[in-house]
Image 1: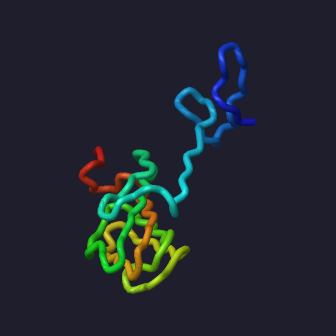
Image 2: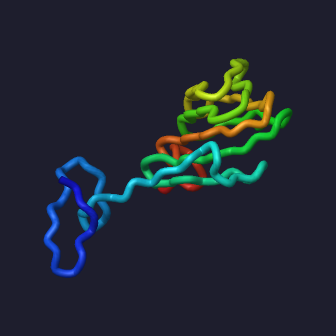
Image 3: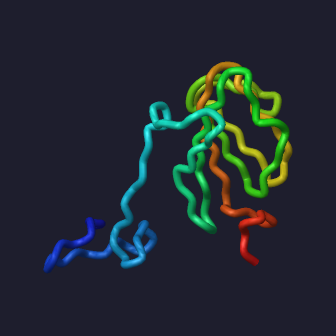
Length: 134
């Protein structure tokens, strides 16, 4: 049974092996967001979570008619349309549409309507990324 960090003098069981834990071995707090209402300005992506060796999640507000020009990333890119309608590499989809791009796969993202996109890059940072350590 996972529990929160103990108060003074309280004894708490540690979470079972394999369950998320903080550095002291206590149950890690779940992070969560409402991607439809979270404040994110156009052209100012918001990093929601980033963990070296794991993944980075980013929320993007892409106004109608705007696009992320052809590009590639070092990581596998998981893209989920949260709201609106976008063209992802030639495939058009609305809220709930998801796509996966391999590392270094070139693609574009264009908003047909005002859109919100969740981008997950994994592993973070990918091989060859300027921020990766050897």
